[in-house]
Image (tube, rainbow, N blue to C red; front, top):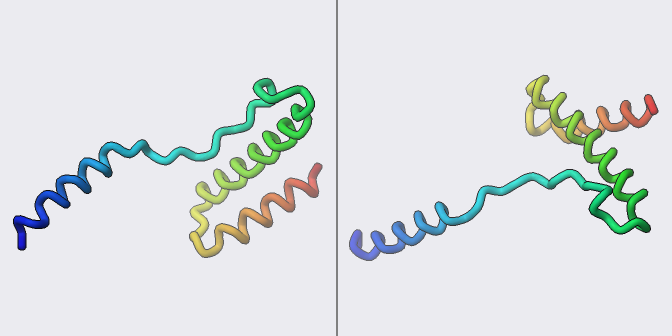
Length: 83
């Protein structure tokens, strides 16, 4: 039985090592967007920056995963209220 598993384990290891690491979504660069969509790209970039700031706050405060969504929503609402 072990002789049959060895090639599968070897192939699985190669596949796992060959896959690139997952990356988070990159910030939108308004200068690389068509002029007619630049305003929307600037708004999207501002929203992404706010989301990252709130995620960083959640990491610094060590928010539990089950409470993270509520924390992020509250953080984004308070940031929107300040503006």
